[in-house]
Length: 102
Image (cartoon, rainbow, N blue to C red; front, top):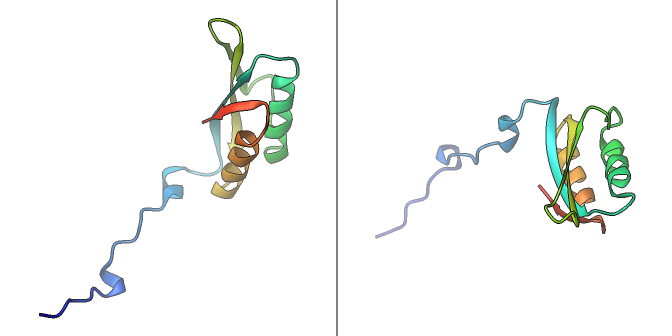
């Protein structure tokens, strides 16, 4: 008995993850790090590298941990495409001040 080969045209393509996001759009990114001087300003600077229109006055939320040792920041950036978001996540998650980026 021989194995049958499925022609490529009949194989379902993997779903396009970009189809889940309508670009451009406001996209929240959460970062968490130690509650130290300069953390918020540094994260705003990183966000502005990828979204020059980022407005810290209106598109940022801060949440301190119960003990006050950590700070959670939600940065809502204007996402223009998947590559921009991927690069922003890499920059945030690789930053020495960031413990977690979601």
